[in-house]
Image (tube, rainbow, N blue to C red):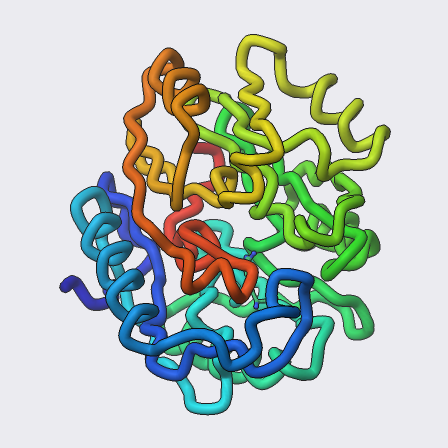
Length: 285
Ligand code: ARG
């Protein structure tokens, strides 16, 4: 497995950060998925599923590993560490105390790996790449989800700090509490998303900015299977599960669907995309 080199080096192979589920469990409830699953996960099964995801991702990308920490069961969801843009890392400010202990570990990892730490002003919540996803069609355009975890006030701050366009979208369904549970920009400007998770102005904003031919709306069944929580590497789309109809739609758009079962993590409200964080978000790409 490749370990970390400078993030400044231009690479053609994507780089992602993952964190082993050594201490993963559901020991508290901070989203509706966790409600019925406290102490209902097994570490062997979680490890097997996470290994399968890491192996699959490693076929298409370099994977860097962040050491897990005891007492921080959600640390495997590296998407929430913060937002990466070029050499900048904007650390998350978690809404719930249960995850705030991750912040020091994340700052430390990114500082030690050569990133510039760029802080949001105090007093606003922001949960990193869980709620902030770069458009794959338009450079320097970031979609930011708010309404559950991140504060809308973080949007203009991110725009200012990173000199980017930020389009805030309000999430309305508590099951889809992070943007990456219901929205996934794909290569060539495609967008995989669950329209039912957004409030009407957010949907209008999406429809204004993404042409109909590039929108891939999913049905609720696929959304509940975390199909939008996908890792897109070139033409490969790695996800927990896709219906036949969704698979056909993605294939018609030129993508290849790879399923990796992640039900143990869905008990905590996360799947493929949440378990990874892109380390090579190149400005202008
Ligand atoms: N249990 C975690 C939480 O509620 C799951 C996080 C999933 N991450 C994500 N990017 N959607 O915070």
